[in-house]
Length: 221
Image 1 (cartoon, rainbow, N blue to C red):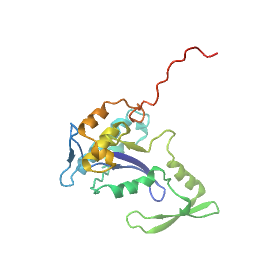
Image 2: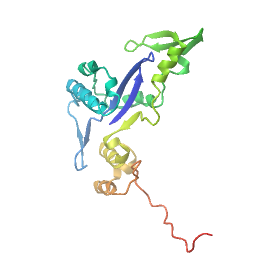
Image 3: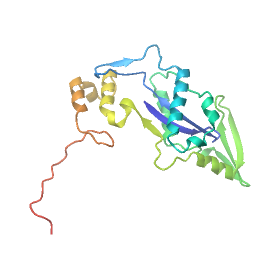
Image 4: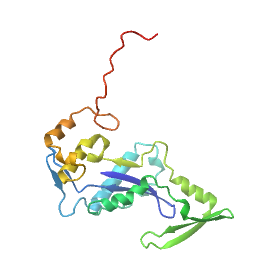
């Protein structure tokens, strides 16, 4: 699973939400086969929205930010939209730009005069092209809303897509018949063997012995 954080609306308003790309299935416990979900069914939206709200609230309670949230927020219905997207290629292409994209690009700014900024945006849902003129200070404020804190990670990977589970991702590609030919030829025994190989604690890649450094015969001067 992959999650991408987006914080803006098309008019640069503050609208934090997360896009998740979730595979329609998973590996069996022994890694021998791929188990697909049935009839394009994954998760029911209503119970998922309640569960997500509760989990978010419980985690926020562990921080100093919880008391800054209006209590009415936890009584409102949270919106969760869970729909099948086929192979996921179009969804991936849609999410990819958000990894590096900012709230507004220069080509959308049409005019800057008299201390005001005029920019264009497409109305969500209708696709209608509209323009907005706001004070330069307000434009700066809206822009800075979407600057993430230092060290904040916008994209997260889970399950077989996590960096520490590359061996699982290779196995998935093998079972689904995608990826390099080497991955297709990899047997289940090779898969289990690779799972036990030493890996980098940060990126999860398999460690490869490059060279043995022998101790020197004498100390340097």
